[in-house]
Length: 371
Ligand SMILES: Cc1cc2nc3c(=O)[nH]c(=O)nc-3n(C[C@H](O)[C@H](O)[C@H](O)COP(=O)(O)OP(=O)(O)OC[C@H]3O[C@@H](n4cnc5c(N)ncnc54)[C@H](O)[C@@H]3O)c2cc1C
Image 1 (cartoon, rainbow, N blue to C red):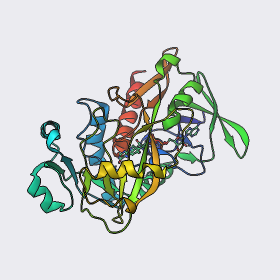
Image 2 (cartoon, rainbow, N blue to C red):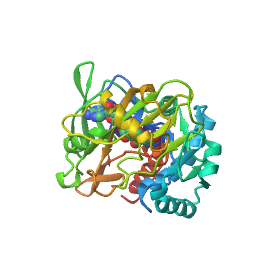
Image 3 (cartoon, rainbow, N blue to C red):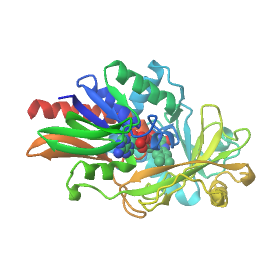
Image 4 (tube, rainbow, N blue to C red):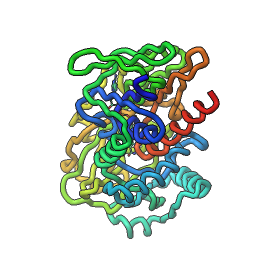
């Protein structure tokens, strides 16, 4: 056998998996593009989430809480730029009930939170107008590119082979996997005991190619989020979030700061047709953005909003359907474990990445012991 585990997809999840699994297994990772992490992993808000929003008991909640601790420790230890800058979740008079529910949830989960009235909020953020707010001091930002680079470095140091320019062409399981990729324009086949599908927006197509039963492949509902930067000096000291949308389709058009202090607003939510994915940012959304932002930042100057970039969430629910959890689906072949497919790894996937990698590694090792 060439490798114990082949990971398909070199985003933050695939690379975190390569790092965790290469402690125990020989690992190959195949990434279709010229570089790692150029899809969703470099098209997000770069926020380390506190873990406030997710359905109770969900993997999103569990892995976000665990992942946040791991990620801060990793950044500290391996010199990844980050800032636990803190976030204000702001509520208008008709949203106080939801804000209270969020505060109770935070207390239940032991997530530090401070409840602020209008005056206390104004003292911290003079330009933000809302009835009340929650301050989350454990929410932060990180340099996701350096983070991915460190993960890749560790994985490589531990012997994992991370291959870019290597799209999956075919995968067939017969006692073990025969995985065909492209190397310098020619098909090339490797053998592997397990295969892990971490191909993000392509996870459904990849699962089909790997022969996972159609009824085990959840429907993909790609949901685009646009960002606009706010030119000039930052009007804020913290991240500013309105109350989240009802089914967590998005967290509302919020303000994040990058490590250089530049403010950007976004992401909004626009469900796309899975056949037509595009990262284009349409200028005509400026008015929609300005309108949403002015609900909590009335002096927002729309002419300072500039189209920046967009990302696409690999959601497993349509608009107005309940939020779906991260879905990890094992693939069996005559009662032999062949692999694992990761579906719906949307936010908080970046925050959860180290915890998810650890969770999958522990699970795989337990299968090996019992299987
Ligand atoms: C708008 C937006 C904002 C977000 N904000 C945050 C945030 O602030 N905090 C947070 O914690 N999370 C956030 N997230 C979520 C986070 O970005 C994702 O959960 C995470 O990046 C998913 O990583 P991934 O490796 O699964 O996917 P990807 O980064 O998409 O990686 C999948 C990889 O698979 C490769 N691939 C696909 N098909 C093939 C094939 N056939 N052969 C070989 N390779 C293939 C792709 O090229 C790609 O590199 C956000 C997401 C979005 C969309």
